[in-house]
Length: 116
Image: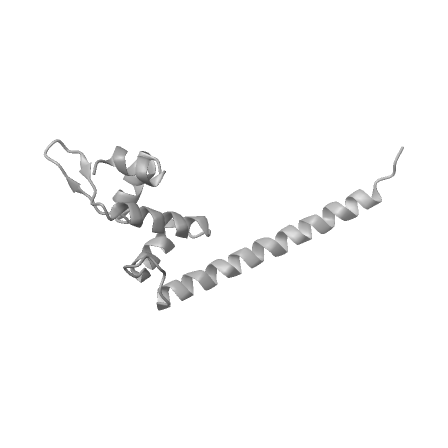
């Protein structure tokens, strides 16, 4: 299928698909006219990439985890997936702590405001 068809079926822009292809996250072959041609399984591959990006992983981490998906589309308990997900949880915990600190400062500042 051509990139426009993949974009329509996956809900991902052609620009993003080209980027994934350049990074080796997707595989395509070039037609005689230079267009990218994707296999049917590319729709599922894009779904997996988007899932990993949606949980906050970067493209490099996603590339490391993609081989951990089983044929049925489920993420398996491979070492790379476990490690990347642990790292992501630590990053989320750090963000939450920073936001809680900021909220505390905002709340304290608001409490100290004198109404005029």
